[in-house]
Image (cartoon, rainbow, N blue to C red):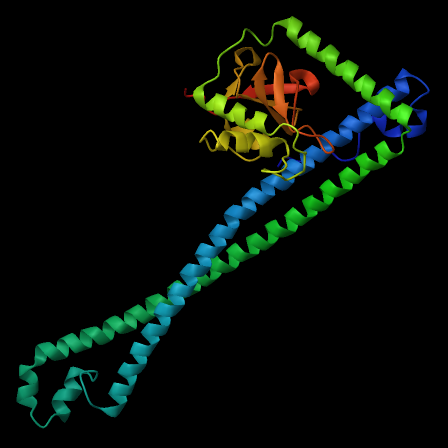
Length: 337
C-alpha cells in the first residue's frame, strides 16, 4: 500500500530499555517507540497485502494471456499445415491449387475446364483465404507473445516486491521483539500500565466530546459483518492472514463483510480510499473505523464507542475502546442501505 517514512520514531528513537524505570518521561519514550514500531509494522503488512492482491489479479491476467497465446499457436500451426498442403499440391501440378490460367493451358480438355470455372475461382479463393489467415495468425501470435511476455514480467516484478515487503515486515517485527525482550518484568508492566492509562484518557475525552453522536441500529448486512467479527474473538493476529484461524486488521474486516455478502477491498488503505466515508458522529455497528494518518489500521465498530479489531502482532482479536489508536475517520461498506 502507501509508502512509509524511513527510520523509527524520532524523539523516542534514543530511548533505551534500561531507562524504563527512571521516570515517566523514559517510559513515555519507550511507549512512543513501541507504538511507532507497531504502526510501521502494520503499514508494511498492509503494503504486503496490497501487493498480494495485485499479484492475485496478475496471476489471472498472465494465465489468460498464456491461454490466448496457446490457442493462437494452435491456430497458426493448423494454418501452416493448410499452406503446406497447398504448396505440395501446386508442386505436384495436380488439383485446384494451381492458378486457373495454368490449369487451362495444361489441361487436355480445356473447354471442360472452362465450364468448371466457378470451381477454379472457388479453389483460388480458398487458397488466398488460407494465405491471409496464415498472415493474420502470424501477426496475432506476435502480438500475444509480447502480451504474455509483459504479463509474465509484471508477475515476476510483483513477486519480487512481495518478497521484499515480507522481509521488511519480518525485520520490523524483530525490532519490536528485541525492544520488548530487553525489558524486565517490572519495566514491561509499567509500559503496559502507561499505555492503558493513555488509552483510557483518550477514550474518556472522545466520549465526553460527543463526537460519536447517539446510538444507531446496524443495517442487516452490518449486523452480519459484526456478528462474524465477534465470532473471531480470541484468534491470534498474524500479519497477512485473513482467516479462518488468524487475522490481521484488514483481513478481519474484509472477511467480516465478505460473510455479509459484500465485497470490499482487502487492505485498510483501499477501504479508506474506495468506500463511502461517514463522520464518526454517524457511526453504526458494522461500519469500519480507520486509524493513523496513513490509514494503516482498521477495526469494525461494535457500538457504544467500541471496536472489534485484530490489534497488532502478539495480540488477539478483541473488543477495544475506539480511541485505542488515533482514528482518522470511518467508512460504510453498505452506505446505500
